[in-house]
Image 1 (tube, one colour):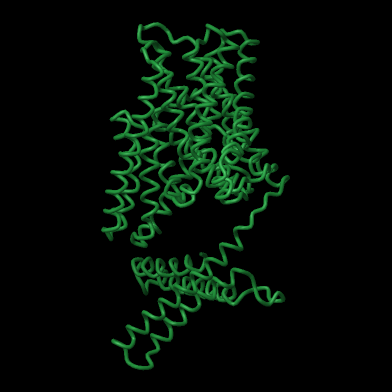
Image 2 (cartoon, rainbow, N blue to C red):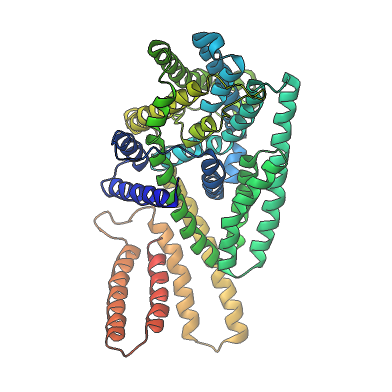
Length: 528
């Protein structure tokens, strides 16, 4: 793709996503449908997905940013469930889909390439899952499990893909060798992520230059991915490990880094997500062209069988994987009570595939080691495309309906508000105690500064308690809400005056920008 084509894609995807957000529609699904529709327009050029663009240019920053926002404590508390999905389910799906594909196509596909197909379609996509699930009202534990699975399952799938591909192209690889490659990929990936993540976290905590720190955030995921892949490790695991480690250290970094870094990463996520979902639908012409000489009946049977197997395999795996460990372990039953069948049903239906599946399919070589054509590559491409479209549209469109239908109990908001209020009370008391110490040593008696600071600390604590709900149900606004509304009006008036002063030439643009930033930061605090 040329630079002009990429620019047109990005601009078009952002425009479609903006319209979808404006009307409260799921932008990933709208982008996929728009791409499919545009693929039928004759004037649209044939755009083939570049696997390097996705696996190296798009996946690392998206995984890294998602890892920064993940909870290390929640992931550790749910490590068994996450591992059963990100490793166990991926390998199970790889084998089952491979067996079904080989059963349908036989020698024309072959066992190795059938397993390649299984590995390609096995992992739910981190981009798709995050983009669709972030607005769904799910219990926090379910979101943690889905997020952890989507962060780690690509590493399992891409490693299994490598091993199966070696066999498909003619490179001798035994089962023992395959496990050795898998172990090396995991070990090297985690080691690289820990080393780079620890070094970057130390540096970020020492620096106080937010621009340099944000630049480190932007460079690190690409460096971790490239270094791990260079040493035959899992680049995905390296990026995720580094992101979780740095996310754990984020509260100790400079506040400007968190403010600017959050804005930058949110913008990057939005642009990259819109681009990849727009690209998915545009792949239709090249996919259809690749299978023009195949039997339509057999190809149709294959794609239907593979798609159904992908959907059913997750459901079949989910219930035994959830209830099996608890049945055989009293310790697990006591420490982690079984979730309801409704929750398991939602998790079983949240297996959207995405751009990583397509990128892995496109990355298949055209020829084997002996120079002969890799027969069956076109079938892998077609099945990957159909599975991605089917899961995105079928599961992505019905998942919100399913959640509303079964009415999942989500009661964390009140508990969070209570915990925050209690912590805010302790923090305010600690701040006031420190203020009293400093005031006694350095400030004159009766200083208004002390009273102002004490009032500010107490107001923050009171605001946290008010989020539990107004004490007087007849009041439409809590005192903090009233304060924020009035202060926003005052800030708007202040901005108006400063702009008028700039327009009249009495102050310079530089003065306006400096004051504007101060007013913006205060308004951002009001919106928290």
